[in-house]
Image 1: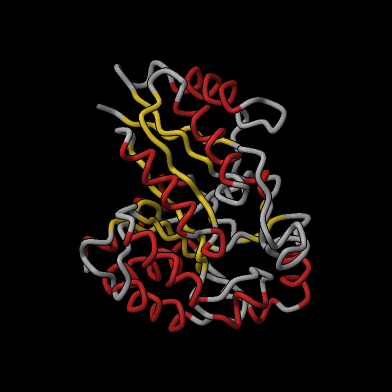
Image 2: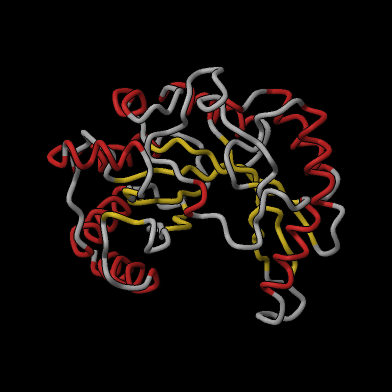
Length: 280
């Protein structure tokens, strides 16, 4: 059976946007850069899923879907709101599970008990956790609003509820060296992580990160396709063998992207990384 994630905007926000821990959000963030066309805020969750199903229909026979609450922090709301939105998604025909993207400081026992109860109803449930980096100095610099300890604690808590965690890490954040990034593999190796999504830092127009990049380019790794591919391959070689890498790089619309511009399709980036990994 083929499973396809359908990205959803559940109308959530983040605690570093609404003032609970900060204002303005992460300095690198521009949600419009990764929301597909069918994922529109004015549409209901059901409407977004049905539009997503039409977008993907015909690619594979007998496809089933995972409702992917991807925009902002999708556990950051009262429990009854979360329950209503998750249940609306699961009520759509051929939706067989949830993937919930969120932040480490938006995970607690109540949220995980809710997700565990959904799993007990026979649905697939997984969490994608935006850790981005395990260096507190970087987390503070990019206005992330949580600590590396909160990331580790959230991963362990999810594990206690038997909910698999995919960690998001961002390579190239300001002030981090190549050696800093490679050292994070050992941090992940010590944690109960199921899988990993790697993203290169993308400097996007209209973000505070874009202004910082213009002013302090020397604080940023200047990735080319070859240097980025080699970094990811070297990182993967250090990573525990049972941690599955779901994504090697991210891709933003060309009109939004300032740097790095690899000049090739996403598939070429991934093929270059896989070729280097095969040589290792």
